[in-house]
Image 1 (cartoon, rainbow, N blue to C red):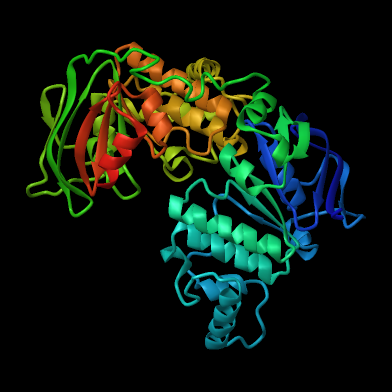
Image 2: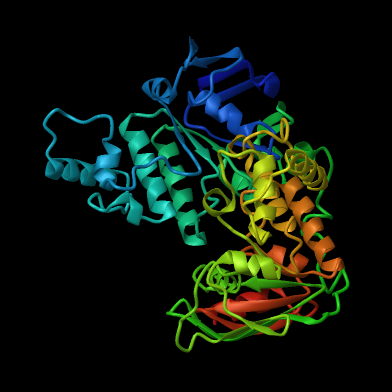
Length: 501
């Protein structure tokens, strides 16, 4: 029997009098990997931030190795051996890897060379292939995560908490992360991770705790769970038939194409997009699939005015039969093109503004004269309408976006685009970092928009999502659309073959 390193008793946290978590008991054993699962807004991040010293509990207590502790800030938690690796890493981009690892632990006379040598030895001991002299801003998501973990290990963290650790990683990087978890566990480090990827939780964890509406529903050995049981506990009902259970073209009829909305001919941007041609039709969901680096996002960003194609020999774009060249997104928005970014935290919303202000910003972006008299009641009514339509969970419409969970943030980003009444809407990785309940809601919305006659494009790296939603599938490889498939003819094998070969 393993001994408990960390314990929560009757933990509660309220914001503005509204409880985010209520009366939660939780135990973490020494050397255990423990997954925390739940829908967006279930209280997962709040609970973990309380353990990491970001939030102070309203009620209940935290015990480390049986001793009660109170954390006023993350430094307090770190001094007790608890480190949290956030979804957005807290590294200083303008400093080297070595400087970030030893940040806060500098000697009075710190020679950079000695620091780099120490960091190299330390990183090698953990089997992390990261250059200690590299600037953090130049690293990919996986390498940044390694630096965060190295920093936590340097501070002798007994417990490391990961918030959505693989949300931005490529399949190769994910595999690398799984190896890291195994190595940390071997060294006796206890790990808690929040994830929306159920397969990941089943693969990595020893135990699983499920939260719903701020309360603990269940803690059990991972061996006693399967995907269906997890979903049942998370949302209170089975979603197996709704979540990738039905296939477009097999279980669901394919929509007939409407009028041609978009025509792209020989589109080129450097080496990212190369002489590619395709069309998009109204009343259909067009899925775009490809491996990381295939150029899907870049193609649609050019269409939406977020990227510029080559000036010479950059190809042609026709929208509703008219030749267009958008240099900024606003002109594309006015014509009726909305692009919902895959990186909502950087490009999707204003995090210090309220839900009302963010949704209204979408409307202002489309207006000819965004500088005018702002009707607060109009903005409020608009926000209420979309909060209700998309089932956004928030304390009230004045809540700051930063206070919302990832899935609810995504819904606000979608509302911000839909308020523009677009004719072509592009969803780039619409369900990344979103729980199973919200995935079903977003899929239902995408289908409804196509049924209403909109031209819908869905870019996704998750093949079951593409097969479940798309009426036709465009497959990208090396910056070019290489194949088009009808939904009723496509299989996982044939789509993947086209994407690779």
